[in-house]
Length: 177
Image (cartoon, rainbow, N blue to C red):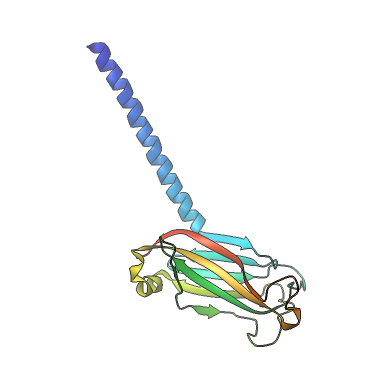
């Protein structure tokens, strides 16, 4: 009987220790997810950097030319559209209204051949705006930064399509307030 009690206490202590290890691992993974969400970026085919950042309640998508000197974007771009979009858990897309900051390019017919170092395009939205706009998201969504470009008119039909998705950055699952 004593042997049975000893074996039971041994297995119970192992089980309790294993539960604690799992809880610590889960807590660490949640902290890592929160850290990953703060800043995600991806290098695009044009040598630009697309970034999705979260600062408190704000999500900001930034497309930036971080090269030094007068590096040209190739192929030449006529117009850039930057989006912050949402995807629910079923994969449905939602396009929230956004405010744009510091848009250096002319969306008209003029080319943006050089995009000097430091030039950037930004789109921002807050979690409160997301929640108000999309109450049907059940309190959770993925935030996606994406940009599309239109190639300069004289370059159409050469290697690159006229307009295409060049890059996108996905957040981890976001709990909306």
